[in-house]
Image (cartoon, rainbow, N blue to C red; front, side):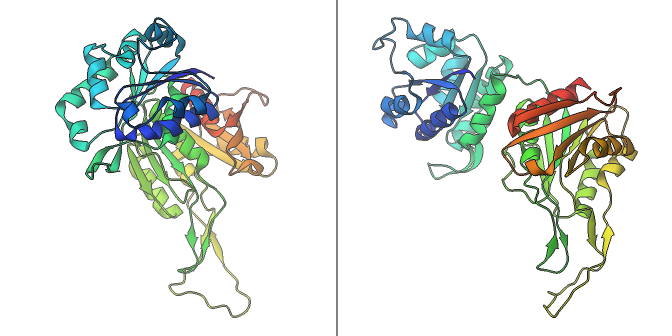
Length: 390
């Protein structure tokens, strides 16, 4: 994987950097650490050296390396500042180099990833916002903080994000920049549910993991992402442009159609119900012997989108099958006027890794398709790369 230099500055969220270092190592990265003097008021070097098995650095003048700020800056593929306080952000913007962390940041010539975490008033202060804007203008990456209850007791934006999101950002930015800036994408994900009565529903086993991985990769790479989703096993990333919960096919169709004409890409990975009960009962059906349900087809969202697709819009569908996967995916690709389809066997559903077969409307032969496999975030990047190639 890559060499990650983790710079920990002195905020209360410094203790969360210990778990971040652990997760980065588990993801296959080598992790070396710099702790500022203020960070050591919260955490100690041994916390990081024991977890990463790599060196931890605290001073320009108390290091085995005579010029650690140059050695570390050259070694790192990506520098991650987590948490990034208002102080270290201001130092970096103005070129102040008065400790090991700030001198290393000044010596590192590649883009950096900043994870701001601070009091909401400090974060919203015009000075901090101006500094963050400057870092982005210079080509650095920024994972915005969450909104929530802060350690100081305030409620607002400034909360350190989940480390799973930080790791996702690291995995993205050591390979990609913000190559999708200006692209508007609508993604559907998860399982819809069709009510039988107030207790019982028709649904499916979709977890929404693939759709969430695609949303995360799109947003980190700069796209403006709208997620329209049904039931999912995990919450959506907090930094998406818009998130709309649609429990059933009818509400999903309405939400998608309302937004569709504004989108450059539509990626429809949701597992929608193909049938709904002809009669929906207002009261719970009592158990009293056999029950026969009459089912009628639900609206075909993908077919509707294909029939109204603007010339420049890219429409991507998914096809999960138990058998005859390629043949059925090809039919769906052509019948529903798609630009691309991602086919997979249902035996891989719900797993953390996946294998997807990508077929394009422009393919000229039966054997002209692409197979990608790996962890879902890796597959998501490959899917996006194939959409860009359209």
